[in-house]
Length: 384
Image (cartoon, rainbow, N blue to C red; front, side):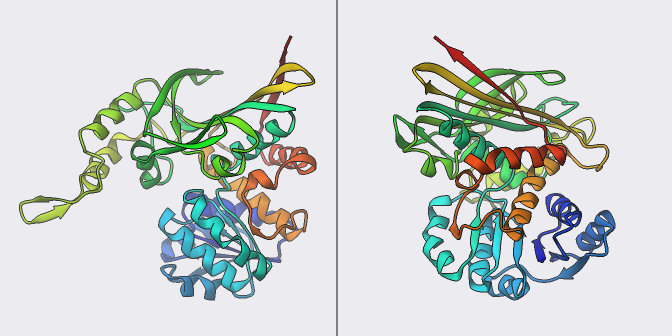
């Protein structure tokens, strides 16, 4: 079996390294536009099954050519390239696991085309969206009547520093979207769009995290796939106290706007300026990070009020020498790719992970995540 990994940044390199460990995979092609990224990836993976390829990733034709003859591809690309990669995978008749979960309503329009090509496209397959999605879906499955599903996740620094108490662990582009984009959620069984940074709440996680805050962020595909199964559904993103308020002020003042302005002879967006200023402020005292996750699904089971709770507090991985966010994002995607090649997953079309890793597949997948270093704790609370 041959797998192609598109993009060899931090996440892509981790995907390559993990996939190379699977005995069922014969060859991995690591593709990037920059030779230095490929060289770093090959050095870290340190596996003869991995070969590097420098190539353009700008167009559907570019990517389709790369995917010819591959069984599965994993896309670790910027948001803007996600739709292009999906169309290229369909054209090449290559299964695709995509880390980007945005614009699901547009991607699912390609469902029939993917089915006709005999391929599976799995959008939003990391930690959030990704792990949070299938935990919520499984929780709903375990209830007779699901009232609410809340998916809480965030990547935070192990040693936060002021003024923002946050560090960017991969793309600042993705982070800034949280502060500016409306959030899809489900309320009373209906899809709703909430303003950015809605629903500020306090939350506590076990040591070494402690007190944090959450706001409602986009529920991605779950808003569409689970709205007929649960009354209310939200995704919430975690930061240390004070962070959301400070970023909210910047947003209200227009510093995160995309509308161009003119400064002398230069035309630029406020957001582009903000990115340059904020980047050095979004660092921690080290590159150590923590990924926190909690999914709570409540409702009725056999006449009793019941809540299913999954929780994860994952720290920087010293053995792999990678951030927690890289590990918890890359490993689910690598594992889904493995399951596709081994035919544990046989669906075709555009199918998000919450429609794949439920029922009989759920526990084996969680156990395999555990064997790869991602520990998710579960408890059930029942009330009379």
